[in-house]
Image 1 (cartoon, rainbow, N blue to C red):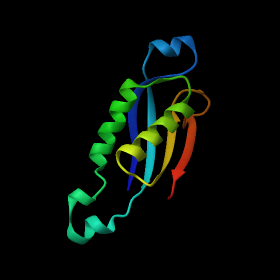
Image 2 (cartoon, rainbow, N blue to C red):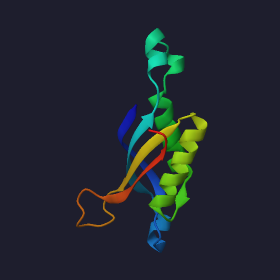
Image 3 (cartoon, helix red, strand yellow):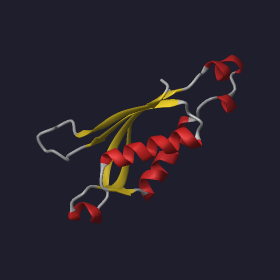
Image 4 (cartoon, helix red, strand yellow):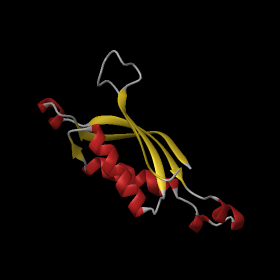
Length: 115
């Protein structure tokens, strides 16, 4: 399962001016999830609910106040794996506009657990 281009607003950054505003982060996530049990019986209860995952990510970002995108990514990955019993994930976090010359943005990409 994956979620691409999820935009969240959060307090992120090390500069004083960044601590007083909310900035947009763009998230791309891929999850290690065995879809076969859900598909076998067309059973929603055995699927990873991407709407619930997306809502939880939004809530996490709303409360987060980190200096580093690295910290945001690590804490988000830990939370998702724990709360949704996800065995592994890949997370690409982009901070658009952080470096004006990098028109696609800058950020981090991590992989945790088994994919």
